[in-house]
Each structure stands twice: as structure tokens, then as C-alpha cells.
Image 1 (spheres, rainbow, N blue to C red):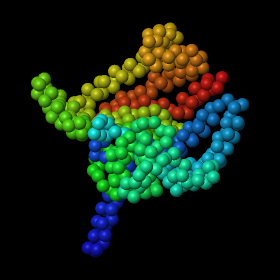
Image 2 (cartoon, rainbow, N blue to C red):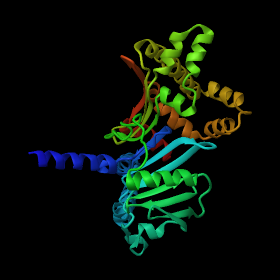
Image 3 (tube, rainbow, N blue to C red):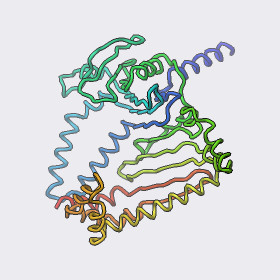
Image 4 (cartoon, rainbow, N blue to C red):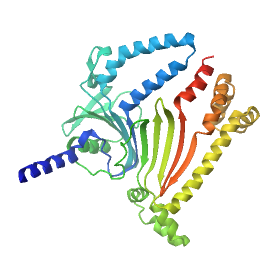
Length: 362
């Protein structure tokens, strides 16, 4: 019995160090991270494309079905052999400011049929520049800063980073389990179903610690005579944004763990104001006169002015927006439970496509 328990203990330790199931490892100095479930994304996107095809006018549907079937036949095995499971992007504290890194889990030895069965690793635009812990280091050709440094680890991971130090620390973490990880992102990859991606911040207390400002809120509270507010802000935990896309729903859910019921009420009030503002904005875009006034009012705002103008001059886009305005108005929901507040914007995929696809195909 003792030998069995000892073996179990060794196995458990090994799983912790190597990362059971190949889950992302988030460095301890991470302030924000994004996780994309690539397998679910591909499956859900395929379902959505099929929904779009179903809503096409009869004269277009047959041709679209044929082309989509041909695409899956030609590239389905490429996608399967690439073996992309997930992508995680992290932002952490570096010597000279924020550092960005990305880790892609895939099959580096997977052969791509449409490209003469070349292996994934042989198709990467990498230029070898060195070695670290038995892993080759590369410079990414043709990719602009910041993610210009790369490494291939364990035949499973492509690591990209904007600094050599960050790249080497991630190699140590993924190859040998060396380095501290953050507990703030334990549920980063606990998604499924309709959710294809999650963006999350560290807890406020962790952010202050990483920034070297652990006492700043306390000092602020003392200076303004409101220690309670400072404590409430410090107790805020993760802020999480889930991106949903499936043949059932699409949209997003913003979740704030406010740390206390009292502060959750404050967040809920702010979210309700935002929901009301969004509804007013939708109604302005729906109303012809209000829409023209909005275009005029934003004409000097870089980016926004041109965007609204282009939208207002596209009859099909305006008609599609009007057709779906009712769904958009009812898409937002604010919900509070204990110290957690959710801001949800979701639309039924089939209902939405049924309204906009025929209009956009005119």
C-alpha cells in the first residue's frame, strides 16, 4: 500500500510540474491573459457557416454548399494534422515595460497534405539564431515587432515573445517546469460549449504587487479619509471577458468579481448605465435623422467619423441593421449575484442570420 501511495505521489508531482493535459502555464508576473480554444473555434465556425448557407437565397445556396464541401475535402485534413489545440497570449511585467508573449499548442510534426505533406515545423517562417535548454531559438521573418522571437518546444509548442528574456523564461516553464506560475488564472481555460475565447485580468491586489504599488491604495484611502473605498477596490478579483460563437448564440459576457456585495452594486449601476447608453446608440443608428446627425457629430473623430459615414452610405448595411435592431436592443442583460456582476450581450445566431443574410445578399 505504501509503495502504491508513493508511486501516486510521484506521479502527481510529475503532472503538476509538466502541466497535466498540456494546459497553458501562466507566468507569475502576468497582468492579463487571453486564451483561445482553437478546436472549439473551428468546430463552431463550421456550424455558423452552415447556418449562413441555410439562410442564403435559393439560387445561391446550392453553389455555396458545393464550395464549402470542396473546401472541407481539400483542407479538412490540413486542419486536423496541424493539430492546433489552443492559443494563449500573456502580458507581463518586463524590465522596460509590458512584455507580450504567445504560446500555440499544435503538432509540429503534423504533415500538411495540400503543401506536399511538409511538416508544420518546416513551414514556419523562422530563421535560426541560437539555442536555449536544447531548444532552437529563432527570429521570425516577415513578422513585425513585438512578437519577433520564437522557439519550438517539445514538438508541441510554438512560443513567440517580444524579448529574449521572456522567450527564455517561457522555454524553461514549458520544457522543464522551471519558474513560478500565477494562481490568478486558474480558470482561464475552463471554457466550452458556446465560448471560444476568454480574456482575463489578474486580481487588483496582484496588479498592485506586480507594479510595486502594494501600499498605494492604502495611502490613498488614508489621504482622502476613505479607507473603506480603498479596501473595496483592493478586493476586486478577476475581470473576465468571454467571447461566444456557435450556431446557438454569439456575443460576449463580461464578468467582474467585485470582491464584495457592496462594491458589486456599484459595478451593477455602472453596467446598467452602459446598457442604457448602448440602447440609445442603437436607436440613433436605426433612426435616419439621428444617424445622419451622428455621422455629422463624429466627422472629425479619427476612425469613427469615416466608419459611421461608410455605414450610413451603405444601403444594404443600414437595412440589415434595421432588420436586426430589435434583437440588438434586447441583447444586453445585467445580472448581479453576490459579489459577481455580469454584463451579457448575446444574440440567437439563427434569428440574427435569418434577418441579415437575405438583406446583405440583395
